[in-house]
Length: 149
Image (cartoon, rainbow, N blue to C red; front, side):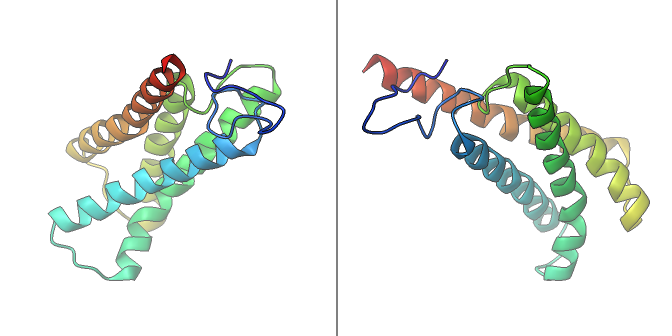
């Protein structure tokens, strides 16, 4: 159930938590997840002094963005099958995280020739877990606080 009120004047809550509250929350959450993945790539490239070449950024980013989008496809398919996976839920975040890391690493290795050393896997998983799951925790806490106010 959404923590934001549904009123005749406003219709479905746009920042709500319900799987059936329309495309707004899903679109916003998916865009936030993609932005988190792009931040991960940007910070990684900067920390390794790989410069600002757009081609290099795109090459590094697309496998993980594709994985993130596959995660969202899995969330939406699970909903069609009757599962309740609100956009801000930890469960949806975990699905997106797993798909982002697994598909991103596989695509990076197979399609770009990029390496997947264990240290990179650990750093990528840790950073992406913090941002993909952490932003959901913050979002839910803010929504709960607003509901109490």
